[in-house]
Image 1: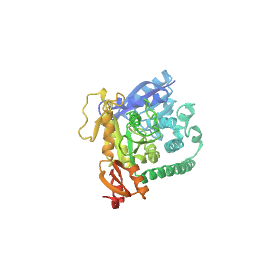
Image 2: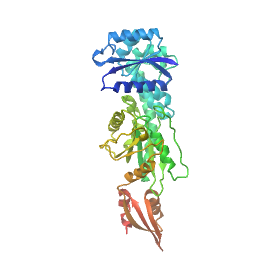
Image 3: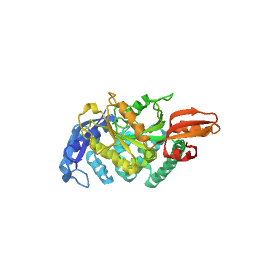
Image 4: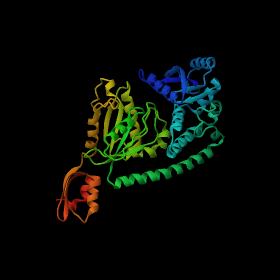
Length: 413
C-alpha cells in the first residue's frame, strides 16, 4: 500500500481542521493509500509560492525523505505554480483535495454518463496544470491519475484538451437528452418525484432500500449500500407504490462533500437536474456526526447552486440511536429516525406522501363507461377512495392534484 502524508492549513473554527483532515484521510483510504502522518500549518504562515512556510516545508521534506513517502496530499486546491514548486522540493507526487476527489469519482464511475462527466471534470482541472503535473503523473506508476485522462493527456496542448472537452460534452448532451425525454414522460403521466440528497455516507441509499421494503409493486429492487464515501455516483430512480397511496418516483443522488470541486458539480449538473425537477427533497443527515450542521450547510450550498433551494424539503435526522441531541427548531418539517435499527421508519414512510400530496383535494367524478382513458388516468395518477359502477357511468371519489382537477373539471359531480 502506498504511503502518504496530509497537510492542512488551519483557516477554520476550532476543531474543524481535524474534521476536514479526517475526511481527507477517508478519501485517501478509499484509494488504498495509507496516511501515516498529518502536518498542520497556521493560516498566517502560508506563502503564495509553496502554500506552506519555509519552516514547515523543511520539516515535511525531511519526513518525506526519511520515511520514503509516496504522496504529499494537501487539503487545499493548489495552483499550477504551487504544484510545480512543491514537487521540485519533495521530488514526490503532490496531490490536492480536488485531484483526490476526482480520482475517486473516476474509480467509482461505472456508467457511460458518469465516466464522461468525470473525464470532463478531470480535463478542466488538468488544463491549467499541465506543466506542473508532468512529474506527478510520471511518478505515480499505476496510482492517482491512471483512470480518465492519465499520462497520455499530458502530451496534449491546451487547445487539443479544449477540443476533447467539447467532444465529450457533445456525447454527454446526447445522453442527457434521453434522460430528459424519460423525465418528460413521467411528468406527462402525472407521477410526482422525490429526490434524496445529503452528505456522502449519511444513509441515502439505505433510505431508498427502506422505502422499497414498503413498496407494493410486483418487482421491488434494492440498491447498493456501502459504508464509504461516494459508494455510488449514478442516480437511481425507482417507482414506489405505498399501500393505499398514489405511486411516485424516488431518486437517490450522489453524496455531497465539503469543497466538492466546482468543475465536478458543473459536469454532474445533468445528473443532478433530477433534484431541481423534484416535487419534494428528502435531505438525509447523519445526526450522530459532531459536525452535522456543517454537513447540512454544505448540502444546502450545492442545492442553491443547482437552483433547487426553494423546493420543499423534509429533513431526515438519521442515526438518532447514536445521539441524544435535539433537532434544530429551524429545520422543518423534520423526522428523527434510525434506518439501521428501524426506529420511527413507519413515521417517515407516512410523512413522505403526506407532504408530497398535501395540496391534493378530494373530488367526486361521474365518468361515462365510453371514456376509459379518463378512468385509467384517475387510476394511475390519483388516490382512489371509492368506485361505484352505475348503468352508463362510473362514480369515482379520488384525491387529485391541481393539474388533474383542472383537466377533469367537466366530470365533477
